[in-house]
Amino acid sequence: MKSEHGGQPPDALQDEGGALSARATTLHLGPGLHVVEIAAFSEPVDMLQGLELPAVHVTALPGEIDNRGAVVVANSAGTGPWLPPDGGTIVVQSPLQGGGLLVTVYAPYDRPCSIPRITARRLDSDRPILGSRGAAGVDQPEPRTIDTEVVLHIHRVGDRRFVGQGWFGMRGRRLHIEAFSIRPLDTLAATDIEFMGFGPGNRQTPWVSDGRLCGTRGRGLPLTGFAVRLAPHVQGRFDIIYEGAFFASGGVGPRRNGEPCLPPVGDDPLEAINLRIAEGAAGCD
Image 1: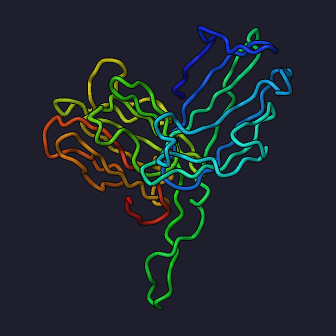
Image 2 (image 1 turned 90 degrees about the vertical axis):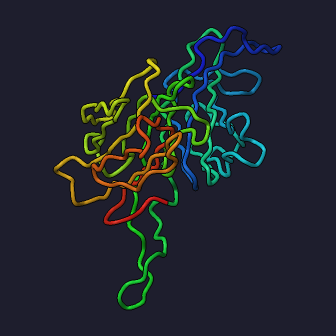
Image 3 (image 1 turned 45 degrees about the vertical axis):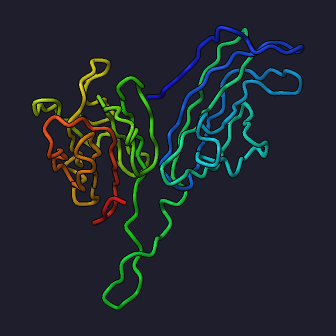
């Protein structure tokens, strides 16, 4: 699921060579170095004052640009924040608190304006990271981790998509999560991850998987806890470790492999999730 803005805008972007339509989507990344791949368009290519259309422009979300947000550090097209109709790959450095990208597609005003397929993975997630020492005193690499796509339905905000690892949500903003979904981006299938939520009065949702939304949307009901586990046929290969951030209780966890993440304060709304999937034992950062 994507958070999209657009369709046909109320006013075309005008210049002496013609008019453009625009459509945009947001992409939220966890901390670290990420590769974002944008697929090619299937529509025919048009030219407008030397610009091939459809064209894609990628930048940090407004309000995150002043040295606090995500930064595009490399582009396969070599044209700054722009990608041509055949798509391409950009490398993005996201800060410790995570950062958001605004991906905008421009097309001729009289043509449909669609968002291409966008995938992201953390570039440094497969690199060995020196961690604990073995019996011989030699540094051992930390277990390999798997990036995830987490979609949160946030009160008064709507659906937001987060990619990577770390905290997902709007921690400290007191905007509660009403629903969420989790999908691994490599190695595991979407059906390999199962998750459930708790609502007011300790109401429990069923366990769901395959990236389906868990909770409610648009009813104003906060989640007050959650749990995540592996499907039975892949248990033992990976650990799932997670924490929750709640309005009054603050951080709770880590919990792992299906253990309920519940706040000590009853019916305390959930505002952020920290999730990690790792080979072998690991802990949340």
